[in-house]
Amino acid sequence: MSIQLLYLYSMSRMIKSISLFFVLSCVVFTMQAQDSWHLLAQVEITKSYDPEFGIETMIPTISKSTHELNGQTVVLKGFIIPLTGEVEQSHFMFSKFPQNMCFFCGKAGPESAIQVFMKGGKKLPFTSEKIILQGRLIIQNDTSSGLLYTMEDGEIIN
Image (cartoon, rainbow, N blue to C red; front, top):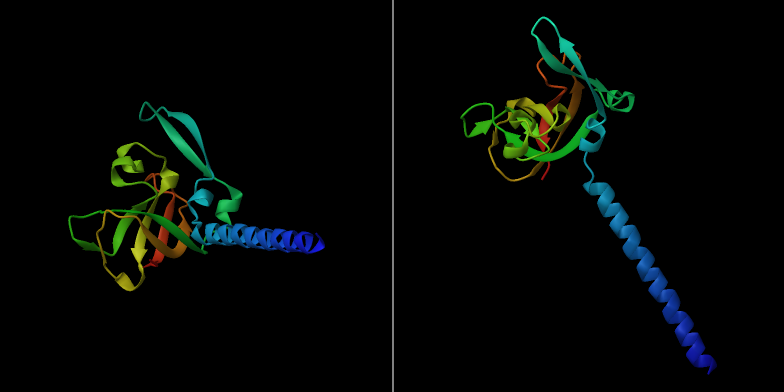
């Protein structure tokens, strides 16, 4: 009887160890897979009437925690939005969402798109697949163009 209890106790500890290892592996994988879009999304939009143009405008206010990323390297997963008809580009828009759902089509906010300049002017071939880029985040002080963010020295990492 005591051998059976010892065996059950040993099996119970082994199952707990395996379970803990699995949970920790999932947490580490999730942390590695995380990108910075959730930080860039920390934007408050205030609507205001512009009497000069006679229209309602939206004024973005970027959070303090997002401003702290200015000049830092960020990693983003998303989609290339070409600026020209060229097959390869070193300057393009990058969106959290595919082109048919992006900010420029009116389906998302300005915090979901970033202008990208590739490192050394390297041209990146267009793909409709999701890719991962890293580069230095520059927060725009003048948001009149509608763009909040620029990535300089962009590199593909997948």
